Length: 195
Image (spheres, rainbow, N blue to C red):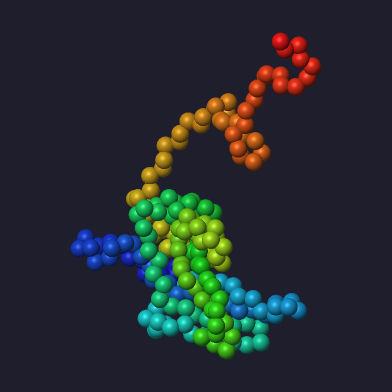
């Protein structure tokens, strides 16, 4: 059992949306490449603890790897995105997605560090960030977070009724460029006989 502290809206409205406080661990690892000896990757999403503070800090540094802890992320569940959570929780391995970017100029260390921007449990959010060409990585969500997410989905997600698929014969005819096409049985060329 993990130590994620999930919160749901209280009767008095103290918490507006269900949320969970997390911290992100980023890993810089040595790779066998002449042009790029290091690469950054998401290592883990862990429960946030008060002792982490509110600033990123170096956890480990040796010749093989570096690990940075980035505390203070709040993963909120939005009622309007219940389908995005349903798509996550209905997979074989529900997960946290993390959007991260490299620092443009080194601020945390001597060299630029990978800095998480957003943590989400929404399949739709992750897809939008990927479509925007952002770096998005995932780690498995622990069972208690999955159970909490499943409870939210059970309460707020409504499956859309399947719509009848329109027969293919009624689809508009388009050419290979997507422009409307026309089919005619009228003969336009050839030896005539037209009077």
